[in-house]
Length: 463
Image 1 (cartoon, rainbow, N blue to C red):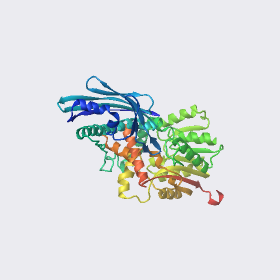
Image 2 (image 1 turned 180 degrees about the horizontal axis):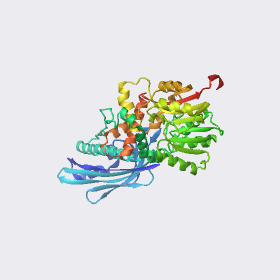
Image 3 (image 1 turned 135 degrees about the vertical axis):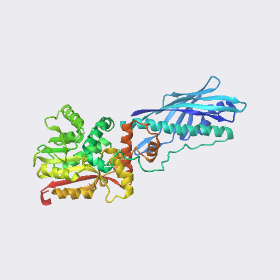
Image 4 (image 1 turned 30 degrees about the vertical axis):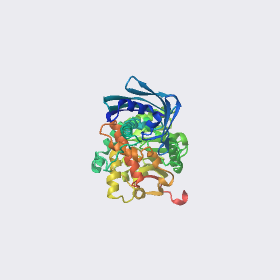
């Protein structure tokens, strides 16, 4: 659970009614509540003390039914304040300031503070606070306008909050075109992970890949480890195997497979910082005698021919500009009968121009990916390298991949895109922009998660 604090100071608005009548209206809390946009019910629990229950909001599998208890009192001649009372799953406190400006004229200003515990990835905490403040401003602007119109008309008038609408569906101009990403892939990918690794670890853990979810309650940790075990099992990795994990990150899948199977395993990574982190993690887990990590380029592997029993990968080949060269290297370093097993980011077959401009290019640009292949192109490259391909499948066949980005619903995405530049930490902004590109691409079918299994030189009859 993460505490999200939001605050808002509503600009003073003019009301064509006396300050005394405005104060009396605000102290009539059940009537006042009818002006609030998202309230479900309000009930009095003690004198001057009320329980506010908000409408339920659902984002993916996350359901939020917030309620708070507050005591309302008049302070001095022109202030009505509310103080939080324990017993709710959120807290709210603040004040209304009513100033007389004439016989039947006054101004109303408000200051509100809300604190809510919510289950969200740590990665999104900064964004959630920014988004919460924006939504709160929209809600309270509508609330104060509703109060004004209700007092002036004598009947309840409920003003709807302004919704963020993004007319231009395209993302900001990408930072590098495909040819530049191919040309600069080495420094581009390494620099990218220098920037995002700590944020990934704090918000996502040590397993830097997605997975299909079997149901609405399965956790991300369970889903990714289940996929890692599946990849290891299909590669027939045992305690006697020597395995290479390509693009190993900070060693999440590498060390999981090592502990799961008891194998000896090496991780290969183009980013020196992650190699150091993974090496230390192996020591901390007590498996440094079986798990080690090397710095190197997977398109030019620093290993002899016929070395490994299996090669695994988890969404790492997308960073490689020459995927065919990588697959030829896998074939070279595998022993006869060795297996290549992993999962990868893919684009759909025959993407339209809209798919490329609106989804694929933003995904690549925000994640330092030179370009993406498809299920069919990977299968062909594997076969051209000499592999017999047993599995080339869309992981949506095994579960729900959209849950990887479930918190990014339509409202959240529109709010983020409407935020002024610089509202969120630049690293978080880049990562959320990339996550939105992935989620929108997946929802439209332009982006796919794939799983592969291929074998070196063994005919199908001997599987």
